[in-house]
Length: 173
Image (cartoon, rainbow, N blue to C red; front, side):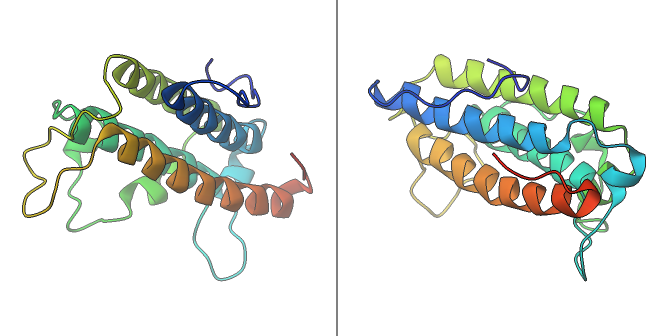
């Protein structure tokens, strides 16, 4: 589907398809809110918050990679994430995303979402997280990971809606 098109989820389909459709709908909502914003808009904040649309899109790109490519399949790190000193700059993606071109950020987000969807397509909902760093707890299954990403993306879609309205008054949907 990609981030260019926002499609309502089917009302009667199998569980896996429905979960992915809801996640894709939220991903496309975030992209819709960020699309067309200039550099000043990408760096704009609201109130006391330091959250920006650019930072938000870059953060969602990171969590797509982190949960699906890194944790679920225990795949290798990917730039730019592996070159970051997260201990000294834990909000790196939020900080740097505010200074990057929104179209570039959305292209990276779209590519991360496509990789995530390919991983989902190749797995079963009951398959367990493969990451060796998940110790001392019961490993979650793919269903849990998708639901977690729905929650994460939905929360940030709300942030994106508020930010976009503050930037240029665009509201709705």
